[in-house]
Image (cartoon, rainbow, N blue to C red):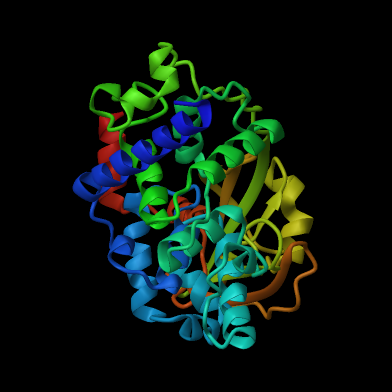
Length: 373
């Protein structure tokens, strides 16, 4: 048998074994019970850099409120961000909303079937395009995420850094070569499932892997060595000051402009500074009255993808609701007095941490803490 024939035979065997395993062993996840491109697209966007168990309740709430792409397209952005609150990476929610509007307005509410056409839509990259095209429309489109990259790097012994330009190019080339014409959606989902459950970063469970006999890394005893991933740079630590201002059960919130960090979300006014004194003028530009008596109540730490925030939390009580003018402190565009729950608008997990840190302790709890000390 020639080299080309052997390669084709191996690829066919891989497809049969992996898809057969997936049908028997795959986790029962809500987005696997549908071929609706809208639902599949929604799940894939939510799953980016987010754990499956975290996504499930958000996915179900979104579909209940926005059952199709037209419903999402016609919604106000604040409502979309409100439902997204706590899921993180809020740019995804804004792009999701804009993409829904584009599909509704330019495509009659129907998603294109081909990956190349899907990639022309707002916020849809190669991975999401491949997922929607293959799973919803049964097109032989490849996809690569972290799980797939790890599986393919081991199967083929790819020695490039899988996050480098050269490494990603090689991984994509392999993915495109291996995706079968028959049931490409099942193949792609099986690759992702294998990486998530068996071919894991540490301690891969090779003994129960359905494609262990075809794995070049296992044959060479290198499954723990691969994939090669470059060292992650240390994230910079940024000092912030936030103030929670309360008046008779309502709190001062500021809405961030779209486009930057936490774009479009509401939060207690927060500025980059190390101390309350350093922050005063900027906080005044974010709606905090100059005469406000600020009290330090704690600190909050919050880790983002490329930075770590160390937030000094201040509290102030307003004798009256201050008149709110247009904020002059970037990145805010609007101010409002809202209830602490801020129903109906988007609020980040960091903002909720800040509000919780500023909540006055109940007297009984304070006495207990003092007694333990």
